[in-house]
Amino acid sequence: MRRALGLLLLWTVLLATSLSWAGGGGAESPLLRVPWKVTEHRLPNGMRALLLPDKRAPAVVFLVWYQVGSREERAGKTGLAHLLEHMMFRGTKERSGKEFSNLIKRNGGSHNAFTSYDYTAYYERMPADRLELVMQLEADRMVNLELRKEDFEPEKNVVLEERRTRTDDSPTSLLFEQVQAAAFTAHPYRNPIIGWERDIRSLGLDDLREFYRRYYDPANAIAVIVGDFEPEQAVRLLEKHFGPVPTRKPAGRPAFQQNAERVERRVVVRKEAELPYLSMAHHAPHWKSGDGHALAMLEAVLGGGETSRLHQRLVRRDQIALSAGADYTYISVDPGLFYLFAQPVPGKKAEEVERAIQEELDRLIKEGVTREELDRALRSVEAQTVFSMDNPFYRAMLLGRAAVAGDWRLVESFLPGLAKVKPEDVVRVAKAYLGPEARTTGVLVPLPLERKPRRPPASLPHGPADGGR
Image 1 (cartoon, rainbow, N blue to C red):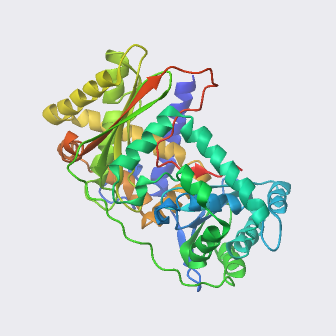
Image 2 (cartoon, rainbow, N blue to C red):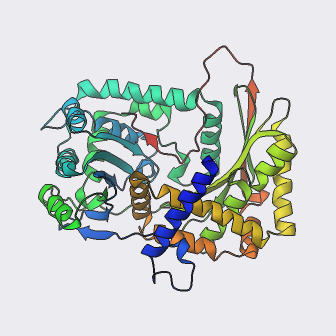
Image 3 (cartoon, rainbow, N blue to C red):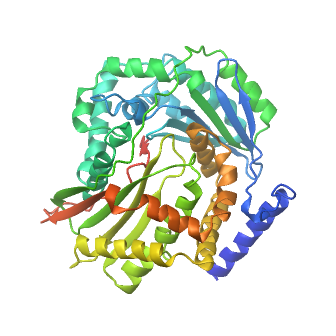
């Protein structure tokens, strides 16, 4: 019954999507188009806004994206962006951090923040008639943040504890961190978003003040609003609350380049753990490349869920892995990594799953991919995307990430781009980018466990570091 209801809902959503895009899809299937009736606005001080009305519920999601993340941190000063994100909840000249949170809660909302390589973002979910309140609050802390010594050391300790629990005590998270650091030799993507422990400990208030002054500027910010509002009214409110914030005209983002060196690297992490783990990282181009869509389809074919090749081979058929998958970042400021990974079952070694993954890669390159397999993978990605569109926060996330990476319209062209990928394109990019000659392989070698509570599962290194509010 649950499956039948799910299929019915899917087709209902697809039909609604199709109707709303009548005439907008050209010769392509209209089912592959998602309605993005976005209004763009730019304030005189340089701040941008993306407005996406959705009247299905009387609520709004409001985010302010600052185009700065761990990517902008200098050597020895890693962790600045994330630590500053924490301090943004400690209050301004106008109101304390506690007052900020209480105002949101008393008005029926919730709020939080997250930091990634390319951005730092703050968000509120609120009833629709409270949109002006959150604009007032965010405009205030864009320019009036108080960075006090009595708040700084306790918040730094919170971050150090966050790092310990999420990375240092998590064997697989530590493995991914080390693989990322080994793969990137000339790009700040090599540094963890939360920062290296020694750097976090050495950060001072002056570091944060300089970082805040340099990057928290309206000309470096993008507001994203999704929900029940009128665009004209939202623009008036943006002009009222963010318009008076002066800009210092921040410099553009620094350019970094990481060439895909033809050097094979191997990282071995020995740590207390129950099971081994294997991670294989390959440099891969992102959305600016003509190969981006083919790489996204390769990710779906190899590691996109239980019907993918790696899961079917390693988990279902050979039963040598508890899990196996792939991860590729299409939207980012600079190119990232294409990951393949697996966790062996008890009694099996990382080398066995590594060999099986390589055999599946070789088979894909030698025998190719069928049209039916590619269509199945496309339907899976399409269904996940369409279902996700029901969530205003997810749409706001997609818009913001794409805007920071270069163009919010990436979200419009993603599915149509996938539909154009041919089986030979998938084989070509697998051959071009997933070869062993430029691979960084990480192996977790488990040491005997002390009696400690089980830690949460690892997240891939490009996942944002949450503020945890």
